[in-house]
Image (cartoon, rainbow, N blue to C red; front, side, top):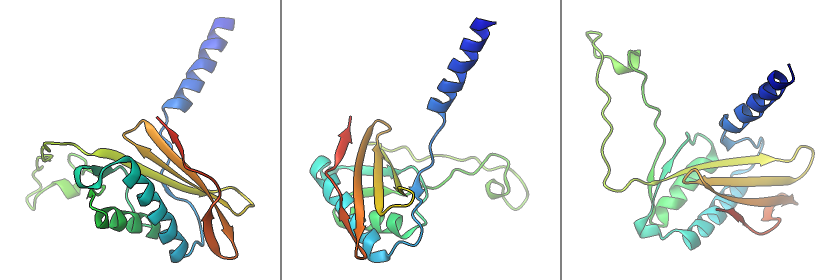
Length: 164
């Protein structure tokens, strides 16, 4: 019985590690000027780590929020190639069938040099004016920075933290 309990606990812990965490912008009521300021700061840091003319980022999430679209535009303005996220249609779905109802084959374009997967997360510490931006690059490396809202303006609250 003790081994079963220990095994169950271990499986629960491992399941938590395997589960994918959500990405995107989870900050409500942010201004466009502050989102742009953070996006420009993110791109400025990426330029120091990855050469723009020879790096492609493959977004791993949709970017419907202002921060995401500004980030994509800023990356492209600096010279990065950006492959935006487009979910693959499921086999047999309406989006994947022709007018006669026949299933279409989904073919992915082969790329000579695959890009670096890129995801972002923006969130806020509950009940405070501290915000966090986290980037995950190539499924391994993360970049994090805290920001503070002071008098309506977003400013960095510390240095970039890089985990390899």
